[in-house]
Image 1 (spheres, rainbow, N blue to C red):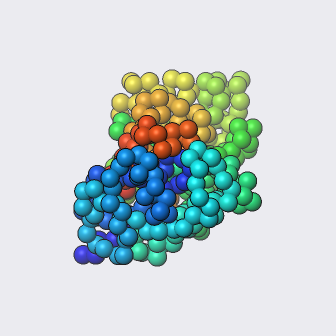
Image 2: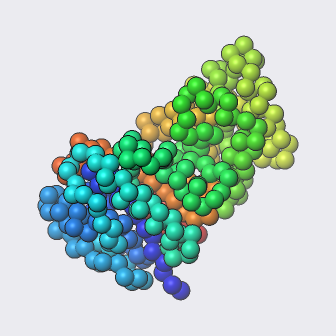
Length: 324
């Protein structure tokens, strides 16, 4: 059987992405793991970190790299990197990592991608409209809807909306969107995570889940009517619950996933429980995509203080999903 590679994007070159990608050289996986990055920049960063990694140009090898080696597919930088200093000139380099990883996955040349962090602001400063990895891969794959889900060993949180200003969230939560998100969430929990009958807890949008309409009617008019349809079909799913009490250990003990209505409703709880050990998964894509749970950490680039645990968890999960 051909062992297709898993690609890893190194992300923003002025941040910790290259640092944590270099730590992958300590792994020995059955499947090739290949970093998309500028080879010379990686070598320079390794020297700064005192990391004696051997960079190996990836040329379609089907076996894993040896311990201490790192497969790299070279993408040239536009301009040299200054640690911690964002440079819009290199935004095209970052986008090329994403484009190439998506193209390989869509064409069957890889099993998928694990991504290091990018800096949205500098990409937009370069005149490239960019709202995030998730939306980029969605557009490349041409799918109508994807779902962002973050997971630790004990908690999975999916989002009904992602990178929206808070004032735009209520209007974005429509019955159509909720049907699309829930369909994807149920499908991928069953197929990718092999959970035959997932139990899903759902957050309300408003405080106290609207408190019978006194604190907002979205639960009554939009959210619960959709949830009732799934419950009538035998799906193990709650009606909307107050988010401030949903995340208690007693409620979560039998849950396979939580559906939060917006980014900062669910993710602060998850990251407080497992920051650095969480992984971001994009559901609804025709390929595997996982990611780190942190940002570019510009101030830590080249210092040796960056933690690589989240990238390793993202790679582990991507490889596990590929096996399944």
